[in-house]
Length: 398
Image (cartoon, rainbow, N blue to C red; front, side, top):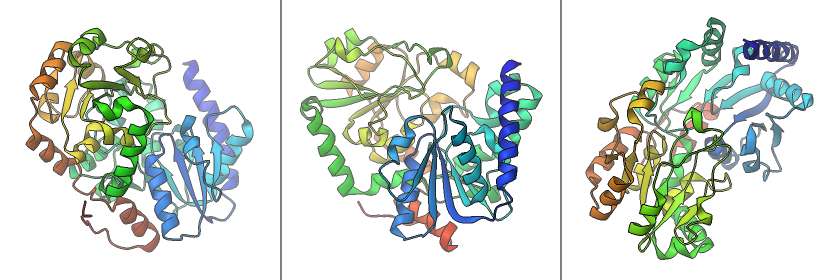
């Protein structure tokens, strides 16, 4: 109850600020509201290539601001601090921008009644989804009526939502309560990276030079999603002693924990020649995928983009029944994922040693989920919004 009061108090202040600044005429300005940043960065880089002369502002949450401070021609505002001036600046930029890009759920959108000519575009932060989100998240039914009304208001602000597949379009329509006319089939901007052969080679060389283990051995990337009860203290369910004993001669294990996890043991200190901790935000997940030979994950959205590389995946779903009951999954898990589903460390080891992967399944998975992500997604979106050109799906040669 206290939490709801605090939220309502915050929204009241934001509503007053936004309403005041709304009297100011719109400016040729684009505001990005950022938690993750990669899609926003690709859109912004495309705007720069096209010489679109709009002012640009990044409202950044957490460490995402580090990604944009390199740009001298854009303003960066810290969105999560306690400075009241930042709150004022947030409301001002949102109220006076012709274009607003967001990449997540932001509660203050519930009270931002944009002018009719403003385009609010949801970039989201994933190409696909295994676990349910938005209004379909099973936890929503346990929230108050006021909170549920707030969720609906936030989702109603999305004039357009970008997708890379028809399946994800349907998920968004269900999760956000929007119609087909709100969907833009441009593809996902950050997937353009996987079609840029020169950039992939540059990143591969750059990362492998940082640590000789990544050059001399095959790379297993373990990138699990978060569990709500592990945000403050993460527990690794994988038996590293067994992994080390059976695989360390040929492989190195890279750990990439979810950014929402606040505290976790640094396992690389014990297994110095086997485990590498790349959980820091300074390492871009898509760049890590380039050096990865085998991905191990669970309910994360990483496989959707990793499938573009047509490399093996293992799904370590040790708590499948519990997780599905708590969060809810869009489809039958074992039928949905493009790789072996395992529940023990022994199964992981055996799958890797036996090379038990169906590469045709991964290719089919990628065709389904990356249908519109063909290397020109950023161009498609920016052209549609600023040039009013129709979206054309093109294939860039590798």
